[in-house]
Structure formats: structure tokens, C-alpha cells
Length: 168
Ligand code: S3P
Image (tube, rainbow, N blue to C red):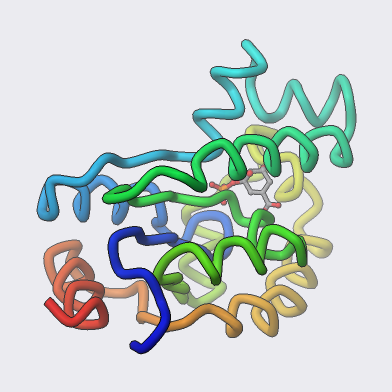
């Protein structure tokens, strides 16, 4: 794909679509570093994502998320597993699309529901009705990724799908 840097991968998609798992498998296969933005946020903040939301609110979380994203822009040969909302923010989206091949991991809602408990660990998943509405509205944005891959299937098959998109 002309003009898109292929020495970096971003995985975007809804909570529970399997971004972190796929990022780790791709990292092993490519020998690239794997960065999970939520983990980096938790490391930087010294508390969990749900604590950040509860104590300082979502706008603060989005600010930290953006700072962490920006800190990794210079890194190459890295796979970035974003949080479900990272690519939804317009400024993040522009930076991500310009910085690396952006892969939307598209999972059906029934699989998401099975994988994301409403236990408070993901603050935006607590209200199931709002969660379903968020899934629908966000799909229109994830669609703006460079490529879409079906999140269903064995992890090995998903890795091959991404490598194929990379032209490997
Ligand atoms: C969020 C998704 C979460 C985490 C935070 C907000 C979102 O990441 O960043 O709870 O807005 O969809 P995962 O997609 O890794 O669950």
C-alpha cells in the first residue's frame, strides 16, 4: 500500500476483539516489540484503567492515552495494541493512520459480549445497553482503518491474514 509505513502496525477495534492477543502473536512472529497502550497507561499512572476513570474521569484518561500514543510515535518495528477508544479520537486517528499500517480487528458483537464481562474492569462496558450502542457507532470509525480483518478463527490464521496485508 503506497505511502503507508509498513515497519509499524497498529491494531484497532472494539474492547474484547482480541487486539492484545493478536499483537503478542504478531510480535513473536515478526520479532517486533509489542506495546499495549492500556498497559503503558497503567504503568505511567501507577493504577489501573478503571481507577483512572473512577478517580479522574474519562477526559483525563484520554489525555494520558494520547500522551502515551505520542511517546511511541518515533518507535519502529513495533506493534501497538490500542485501547478500544484510542482510534475514535480524531487527533489520535490522524497520527495513527500516518504512522503505520492500521488493522481493524472486526469481531461480532456476540463474541465481544462473551469476552467482556461487565465487572467494572472496563468502565465503558458496565452499562450493557450503552455498550451495545457504542459498538454500533464506533464501527463507522474503525472502518477508517487501512485494512479490516475478521477477528474470528485461530490465532495462527489471524497472524497470516495480517502478514498478507503487510505484503509479507
Ligand atoms: C476503552 C477500551 C479499553 C480501555 C478503556 C477504554 C474504550 O481498552 O482503553 O477501558 O474506550 O473502548 P481495550 O479495548 O483494550 O479493552
